[in-house]
Image 1 (cartoon, rainbow, N blue to C red):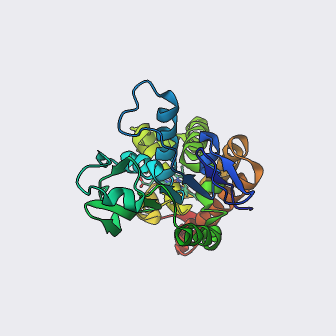
Image 2: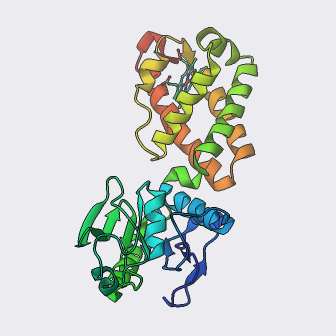
Length: 288
Ligand code: HEM
């Protein structure tokens, strides 16, 4: 998969031909986001829908951990997104602010940020998660170069986790809801579920968390699949039917490659559940 574009809010800096105007739709695919100094207000954005749109866009990028480089008023904007107080220039550090080329407004240290350089009371260079912020209006060349180099180095983060490949948690949940609707209506599987699941919302939460975890989206599910299925009286036929219906739902809801990925993962897990069944001697064919 090719790395996504390097996006920028206006004015687009002269970083080469690869930089594109940022839109909210492109944020999930972006390799990085630039938020340059634009001289526009940050603390008071009343009557400025354009500014609100930028705050939304930046918040989206930060939430998705898109590497972000911001400077000048852009740094203040990102600071605001991270919940920091915004201070007006001229306070405290006096003439030194002009000397450092500070923007008219600057952000206090956002929670969890590390300040690398102070200018008097002003956090001049700080980092928070995927954000690098420089409170001066002119971005130092080495900072720009380091950021661009880190993007090149970070490209292995694409194609991303298998979870991204299947379209994220929302896509997964919709597909699973359909799968369990099919399973409940099925003559062989339906009675097993009816006997053991009463709260379907909770079940859907748990199986969604399970698949999010299996697909590399974080350890949100903890449990033991064998223990969960022990005592349900499952036979090989249950497993076969389960996998059939799972494949049907996956193919309806997901692009072919994503469906194939999910079905192969389920098949591998089903085989492990099945192995336990065959080890069971007289109960062969039953999942314990
Ligand atoms: C690859 C095959 C399978 C996978 C990956 C799978 C996955 C899961 C997961 C993740 C849960 C929820 C675990 C939790 O609550 O934390 C679950 C529960 C359950 N599964 Fe499966 N399952 C498989 C096969 C089957 C089959 C063949 C049946 C037969 C009908 C079945 C019936 C159930 C039932 C009834 C529960 C609810 C148990 C309870 O809450 O008491 N599963 N399964």
